[in-house]
Amino acid sequence: MYGARRTRAVLIVLLIVAVALITLDFRDGGSSRAHTVGARLFGPMERLAGDAASPFVGFYHAAAGDDSAEIAALQKQNDQLRAELAQNQVSKADQAQLGSLGKLAGQHGYKVVTASVIAVGGGYADTVTIDAGSRDGIAPDETVLNGDGLVGTVTATTGTTATVQLATDASATVGVRTTDTNQTGALTGTGQTMTAPQDMRVTLFSSTAVLQPGETLVTFGSVGGRPYVPGVPVGQVVSVTSQPGTLTQSALVQPFVDFTGLGVVGVVTSR
Image (cartoon, rainbow, N blue to C red; front, top):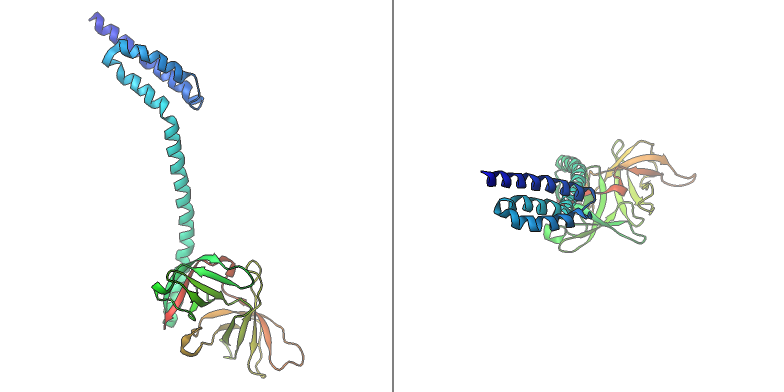
């Protein structure tokens, strides 16, 4: 009976000392001398106390020795949660764009392949690269749009990517018509940088046609629907810029698409 009481007393003392040393070690971020003291103290006492004391000794070593690994694991988990949160926020924007894109495609009977913009072209050309290509059924001279309207046209493909010339590029020309008066004209990009306002310019074909600010333009369509299918919203006339003596009217057009924030797009593969 005396031996049992003595063993119980030893175990209580070991537990108290272990908790005290662990507390000191955590306060100092694992650099405290408490870790060394604990090892020196529990080494001899473990041999004296025998198997009954070994669970408490193991508890001390596990708690005080593995805290750095636990902190690293928690930090990794925190980083993963941050990444997932950012991805969820991006996904919400993409889902909204996909919904608008599906609605637009459904209204006109477009069959589209969806893709995401993964790179922006350099130099003087307004181009982007998307993460879908010939393996997905995409080919050059196909219309690219998003839920807001016309984005551009495919100029080149690889198996898994495609290059898209944006409608704002200075060398891009799109046949358009006004939705109210059905007047036709040619829309060209102004060649501004993608970080600047992306106004475009329209010039009507008829010398008797009259443009008014606020008029909406849509694509007129190309033969066979390539490179442009008809009916895609393009933009709105913001100001008439025709000079006296000119045969036809021209105007600046504000596009419906935000070319500085392109994400999800659709390539029209058939109609």
